[in-house]
Amino acid sequence: MARNIIKVLDIGSQSAKALAAEVRAGDPSLRILGAAMVLTDGLRRGEVSRRESLVPRIKEAMREAERSAGIPFREVYLAFGSAALGCQKIKSRLPVSTGSREITSGDRERVLAEARSKSRAGVNREVLENHTLSFRVDDEPCVKDPLGIQGESLEVEILTVTSFQKPLAEFIRAAEEAGLAIADIIPSPLAAARTLLEPRLAEVGGAALDIGAETTGLAIYEENLPFSLRVFPYGGNHVTHDIAIGFQIPISEAEKIKISGEAPGRTSAAQKKLASIIEARLEDLFELVESHLKKAGRSGLLPGGVFLGGGGARLANLEEFAKANLKLPVQTGKCRGLEAGSKLGDPLWSVAVGTALLAAEREKEPLAVFKKPSALAQKISSWFKSLIP
Image: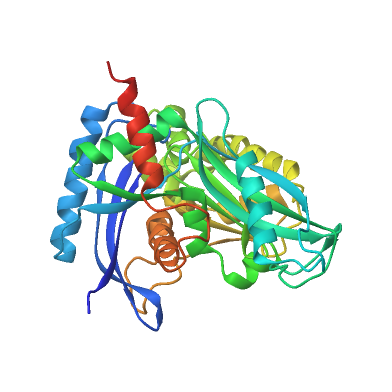
């Protein structure tokens, strides 16, 4: 029997991560066959700025991952997490078609098709995914599947995840120039949430905040479904740069100070200065996070709390700062869904691991997000080529 192996590429502003994971029958956990992480170049705030610099780094990540896993990387699931991502909720309502007023699969598919048609992105945007959030029968909430319920009308609400076309196309083109085919695109905030959030907390309401080098992804979940997402153009590097300027030290040293929380000289005055620098930058980030929570109607209303991921989650005293600013339970997450003893439990790997978990689920149920694997990548690639004179 052929092995079911998922291959993932997560390209961040500071590092590119590649991994191969095996999905085994009867075992919900992934077995990591190999993984690699290399420094990147040619990205700025999650978007390609110099493709000629980025492509060699992707190739290096693939070579290292192939050497680690002992298998070739030809087709990958690509995580995408720039500020070009966005989402919107769409409702559609249609009358029940049968004389008995009993809702059939045909009614369900018609109202979903109507909602999907409304979700077509505007100018320069592309739909990545559509997630079914809820159904209503005659204005009354019902179970997730309305089949067999009697009523006059059926309404559905979906969450549409979109992206500006050009940043996404640049990402795909860089991967293709590195010799890879794209199986599908996975939004990074949803990937991080998949591995950081426990199902019971995603059920009652929780969020994952993945803090990268230059971007931070937020995904809010309720009823084990994505409720909202956003990517902010702030990350751990902004804190590092502020420390470097404030203490007039090299960036490499500032990065160590950021993680350790120990100021140069370790004097009381230096510690106060460090705390002031870090808090000023984090206040900017958490103001954006809180603003989005308010817009989504979930400010202070996530009993499952917020789970921190990404390399920025290693920042000293971040949990306490986040709790004070968001007024929610906050803790640093770890990568779930891996076999016992895996070395990729560090939240630094949250997007890559979560991408593998979502890819495995979507291969089992490809219609779950209303998208045929690879069709989107082909469409974007064709669109991008049409722009080349």
